[in-house]
Length: 286
Image (cartoon, rainbow, N blue to C red; front, top):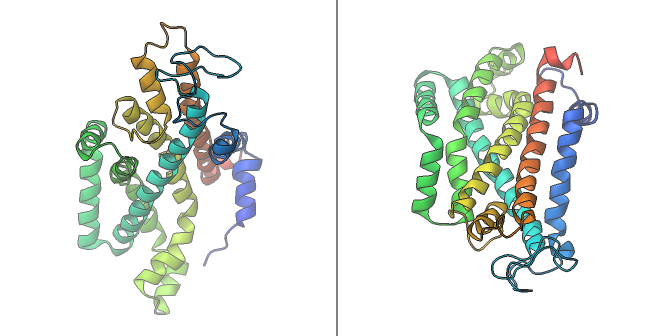
């Protein structure tokens, strides 16, 4: 097998020595800690009525209260859990599907490649956003449904990239040597080729996270999210329905909107750092 750089060195190049990666991981970790510590740092139960409706920001309620008297800051803290859950789970499932199909298409070739490539072309040609909205409305408001829908529509681009990379790797000397020694196709794909795809796998998950976070927020804003969980998109929906700006409750809109943008930007910056690490021309300048 080819000589590989250590994981520690790769992390150092992507995060420590890359300003984009360092900024991105710092932003994401901030929200990870927020999600983990939400039960301890939230001043109130986000589902409990703790004051009069539509109260302005105060020392007791930093962002005020919503239309039924729930603490908005507590809602925002718990909303980070939903965004991170969807933002990590949906692209992970999509990347897993893309990886398996890309490996099969790129290594096996022939009829299998034609069938998988045809499915990829069909998925990429579909109008994704309208179909996501239709399916979310048809299947009902559920966080699991949103995750599965996003995963279903998110695998095609990654599968095409994996397929092309595997087609390049399958003719390498170490793969030919493994084949000559009698290694099975499954062993070659998952033991000899798969490790070389690790940076691309990470990049696909990270970049998919940004899209998943924004899409989940959009669906929740449209009323297609899970009403039983707190999410930033749902908070924005209630703020818009309550005419928050007219009531001078602009923080009700600004803070969850800012957090959606920041978390998406954090994942995007990590993705850019991984891309720079994988691109030899850019990597020489790091």
